[in-house]
Length: 113
Image (cartoon, rainbow, N blue to C red):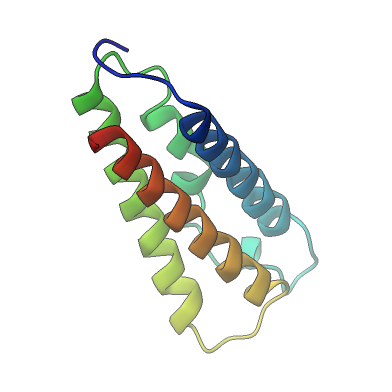
């Protein structure tokens, strides 16, 4: 990507985002009839979010993709946090979404600064 210096911190943040995404997907997909997968369909943006910014050609494109991913994560987090229905791994899913949002915001800060 032109005009951007890759640092260890940047790489570490990308790795954390990947772990968060995989962790969310794994928890979302597991479980029985009371799993989140049977209740929600807002995980598509979480699973595909990496595609929105990985391989970007420039800083603006990457920031836009990260911002889209953040919005998708915040939407899912809002749904999961405010639903009264109990479902398997609810607290863990919310925690991972919070971590993912925080890591994406950190990545965006690193790119902008």
